[in-house]
Length: 554
Image (cartoon, rainbow, N blue to C red; front, side, top):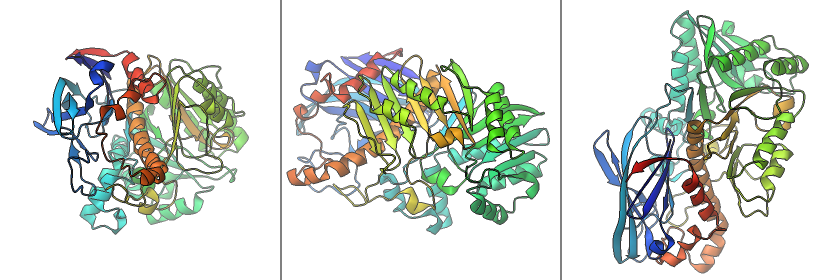
């Protein structure tokens, strides 16, 4: 959902997903010459409560003894950016936001331009697409403050349940709810899992089977055989529910999907990047994506039926291509591609999509990926490219001379700096797997009228196309879906880019005595970059100004 409102010389652009909202501000440059920032107030119209938004940044001249982890109201310590994100909203919630420009000096503030906007957060329960994102930031100030960086399995049960609920952010609950739709023997569930270890999901599937639901699970018995079969034994999953995937043991059965059937007809699919492990659901950044489209569900069922006989790689390639052949370009609507495939043409098409962008590319990569996509990202262009990679390694490190490229890596503040608390990571809280980013995501021009969303289990690598069992959704032209993914991408990107910047700039900050938690005391120290036409902050602001949006009276 995209909205725009303007009043008293202040414009606010809004992009709302189902669990996050982005706000971009604008005003004439002359009006911003004495701008200290923005005072933000939020009212929950459902509960009748409200509060002043706060942050960890403050004016050093007005705070004598800052406490570690403390937050300060934007009324006294205004938000110094033309972009603000609210990641604490609920699906279907109703909120009123009031924004006021703050001018003058820290000791003599003047509150001038003011406007309010009411926003009803969309709920995707009845939509074709329903997307759920876990918190994805186990290493965060919030987790450090609330849970003291403790492992959930070392906490008392009540505290552990609270920590897991916070980390899940609704992802586990949505997965269980999908399974619980199958209520009796008129339903079937056809599942395909790479890592199948998490007890709660196993119990939900067992409960469905006890109700008469026909449940079948294909699981990886190649690379993950030992872990999966140990968990299957521990969770006492009946063998009649299970189909091991054994052929071509050097490859992996990397899918994470479920097909729901009613009266033998496929009706919906759960897919995405989330493995059935505690770390997948609660630790590393992951997505669950429900598609309520019978034709897409039929394709997933056809693919599941192809895999159930444990075919070798050549036979699986034939089956994948019979369901969806390679294409020369992506059509409007939903297309699903399955792997293995006979050639990497699909990866070349992804690279071409990056090259053809005119506004913005957003990418999330857990591991190394195809060189055509890398080259397209590194190329000199006039559009923005924001990239998140799980970690810096020989095959994942990207360097580019293009100033419009911002490439960040997963990280946490492992030492307390600038009154921030020390953080942890998913590897310290849960066993095995990547510690930060596990999403596989490409967004091409997400704020345009024809956005492209590419998401699924595949890691954009040659192996994911040629050898592994994988699935990838390509959705073109769905602005609401692009908004869901873009708002969540922005949340994760801002989290890690802040930590990358702090670590990168700390040596210079220590030499100069600069504390990044200190707000700029003079407007000239931060405002000009939002009006300089070659600056990233200006180009980002322009994306929101130029997007097609519904105009709301201020």
